[in-house]
Each structure stands twice: as C-alpha cells, then as structure tokens.
Length: 253
Ligand code: SF4
Image (tube, rainbow, N blue to C red; front, side, top):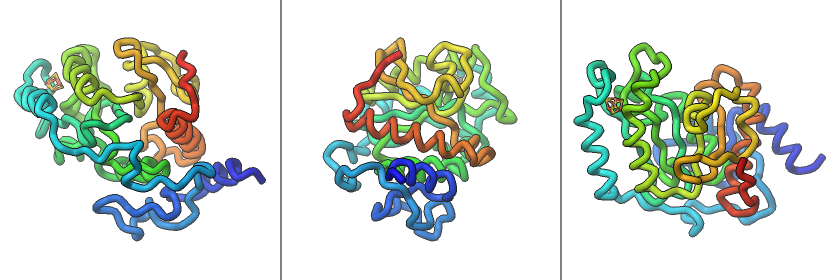
C-alpha cells in the first residue's frame, strides 16, 4: 500500500496525529488522549521537521503594534457583544508566523480564558498542528470577532463588520504567507460566499482583501462531533503543509 494511503487510513482510525518523534508542546504530555500513541502518519520522505526548523518562526515577542490593537480591542464597545463578554479574545501565537488560522468567534471557555481555541477543540487543533510539525506558538491563531456571542450563537453581520477592522490590522501586522479559515462560518465570511464546506475545502482560495492564499479547514469542534471527517481534515493539513513548504504552488481560485 502506498505510504500516503497508509498514513491516510491510519489518520482515520487513530486519536492522535502527532508525528513520530516530535516532542509534545508545552503543557502537553504523552498521556494526553489526543496525543497518545505512535501511530502518527509521516508526512513525506522529507527530513523530520524540528521544532526549531528555520522555515518557521519561534518569535513570540509581543509586537508593539499588535499590543496597541489588543488594547483597543479590550476597550472596544463597537458592538453589543461588549455588554456580555467576560474577556476579549484577541489572538495568540508567533508574531512573525507564516500561517494565520482564523476561526469564527470565542466560545464559553475562550471567553473565560481570553485565548482562542482552548478546551477540547483547542487540544485537537494543537494535535492537528503538531501532526504537520507546528507548535501552537509557531502559527498565529485568532477569530473574526473578539467577543463571545451569547449562547454560542452564530455571529451577526453587524458584529462581524464592526470587528473586521481589528482582524485586518492583525493580518497586516502578522503578515503571514497564508491564511487558514477554521470552520464553515469563518470560511464563508472570509471568502464572501455561501458555498458549503464540502466545496470550499480541498483547494487553495485567494483572500480578496489581502491577496493571500487561503485554505479552508474543518473546525476541530466539528471534528470532535464527526470524527469520520478527520480523514478529510488530514488531507487539508497535508495541503497546508505542502503549501507552506513551497512544494505546492498555490493554485488560487
Ligand atoms: S466583538 Fe469586536 S467590535 Fe464587538 S465589542 Fe468585541 S471587539 Fe468590539
């Protein structure tokens, strides 16, 4: 069986996608049910990526401009979500990251902790990133809107429009090589489309405002509910990896 197929099948049936030999990220242990096991598929014959690979950045030093934007978000009252939030959820990661992941909005746990993609879904996202050789702090992770919609409802147009400028400023400051829309709502909003996920994932789009390549990925919370879709998510991760590595020229649609 070709190695890529074996890896694909392995990814379908296992709870962990961490690459063999890759050290757990800070705070993660091999006891973590999402990270346990050695069944992780290998990406290719290329050399194993080390956490300090020169093709990715370790920079976490807060950028002064980002701190100014973050402070503005913390004071923001542009939309009604400021009335119900506990904390604003700005973004985390390397300020010189090549890859910026953008979700929809903070959930309850994010609202409590002030950080995007925490809890079970966050752990799965970390495991997915680990699988292609990235630690959480080697990408940048943010949401389209910075305050939690009550009851985890979908964000409203007015809220997304009100918050759009903060996201645009973040992208400008991080200046990533590519964007990843995490989940259907982020994908449809960032691409200004109503196409379903099934037609959006699996190819590289162009993010019109910035011209950056954009990949669509299932939301980890969705994958926790629908583990059978992990195989497709794995294919998307491989596409992300190869695009970032430059081994696949983005065929922008
Ligand atoms: S969601 Fe965005 S626009 Fe609305 S209050 Fe929060 S930071 Fe401001």
